[in-house]
Amino acid sequence: MQNTNKLYEEIIIAGFGGQGIMLAGKLLAQTAMKSKKEVTYMPSYGAEVRGGTANCMVVITEREIASPLITQPNSLIVMNKASLEKFTPRLKDNGLLIYNSSLIDYEPQVSKTIKVLAIPADQLAIELGNHKSANMVIVGAYLQMRGIISPDTAADCLTQTIAKRHHKMLEVNKKAIYCGAKFAKEQPV
Amino acid sequence: MSEKKLICGNEAMAEAAIIAGLDAYFGYPITPQNEVTAYMSRRMPELDRVFVQCESELAAVNMVYGAVATGKRAMTSSSSPGISLMQEGISYLAGAELPAVIVNVMRGGPGLGNIAPSQADYFQATRGGGHGDYRTIVLAPSSVQELADFMSLAFDLADQYRITVMVLTDGILGQMMEPVILEKKKQRKLPPKNWALTGAKNRKQNIVRSLWLGDGVLEELNRKLQKKYDEIQKKEILCEEYEIENAEIIVVAYGIAARIAKGTVDKAKKEGIKVGLIRPITLWPFPAEQISRAAEKAKAFLTVELSCGQMVEDVRLAVAGKVHVEFYGRSGGGVPSDSEIMKEIKQLAAKR
Image 1 (spheres, rainbow over the protein chains, first blue to last red):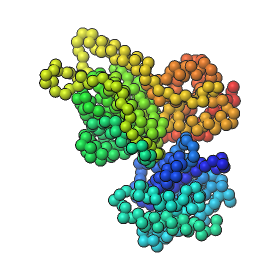
Image 2: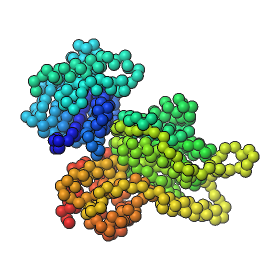
Image 3: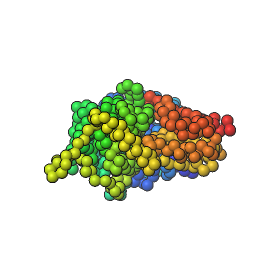
Image 4: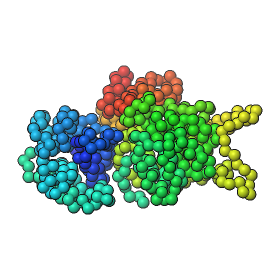
């Protein structure tokens, strides 16, 4: 971050359509709003189909946000190989890279200044009983790593972010957030 | 009611229009504004109001014409290619002096272009893309909150002046989410719609039309329209002036470009560059006076747009040759970045 004493967090979340990329971004944004931060959420739009590429940008700060677009993120969450290849070169020095090691089977080459967390998000989600919750696992891990907002707040915000018709999935998603947070906590970085 | 909600610009404007008393919505799907139509299709029937997904944009704008002719509040929304198709209808609305609200969530052009954000419909919106001597009021929000707030303003302005009001925004503002407060605004004091077609029982019949064949009748109507436009230019200009007091360089930008530029202005000031921002909120009427006044003191202007240079013509007209007006724009889906704008500002500062 250019301004170390002030929060200006620029996050890109990327993967393929169907991985819940947009939902993960919306949950982060909702969580940031609940924590009284300034926040914008910008989806890649128009081409959200299962299997296609999907990404979204979330800016979290304590002052007025100029642009919701992010050219150089300081945090990058990638759920598949294509997204890793595409977005990692844009990551800022001293940034954070979290990648889904269930689908990315090699160690990404990044600058030494970047914190890296490999998390088997799909595998952890399957163990919880819902493979679709991999997005929530990785959100939990992100919140734990960055320490800006508590994973508890994200768990509280699920009811607003998840459509009512899916509310029977609230519990497993909550578990997924905590599972990701726990995983991140236990990793030496 | 005053609780903050996280919603996208398209849905914010849809709900805000409903809160402002929208009676009927007519639309035809097009990215990047589909959330408006989708939202309306769900909410309007819930409220027992009118929603029609039309067979085309032509149908949509003409249904709006019909609905507002009865004195109801009606709107349509679309994106650039769809708005082009509506131009005939907008000209007719002007000729019949009908109060309609039209939202353009601009995307890349010309032609079908792409679905990325753009500001390249400035000429079309501010000059009147249809035929004849007419104007539409053009409002340019630069946040999701303003997108919501300007809906009630748009309906009030439309009703007050019997004019079409266009809300001109872009794919970013339509799609992005940010915290918004949605609440009912105090309505302006509005004239009675005694011209509306409400059934002529016990009164003289009203006629709403844009065809005036009688000798000199149309010229008379045009004079009346111009008088109305003059009044709007006197009373309804909205403009944000940011840090312009001691500014040597004035950045002029609207909508999403202004928002990005504001961030750059803050950074440039920290580096000791004397720079400020003028953000036209009404694009027509254009804040020419504010810009002209700033040109008395400033040494250079920089206009930033998501286009190849459209509003910059109005800026140059207002500056009237007093100082140099530079332009920086990206088009076809490109968005000027903070660092690109900074480079332009620094180049201008170096010339001083």
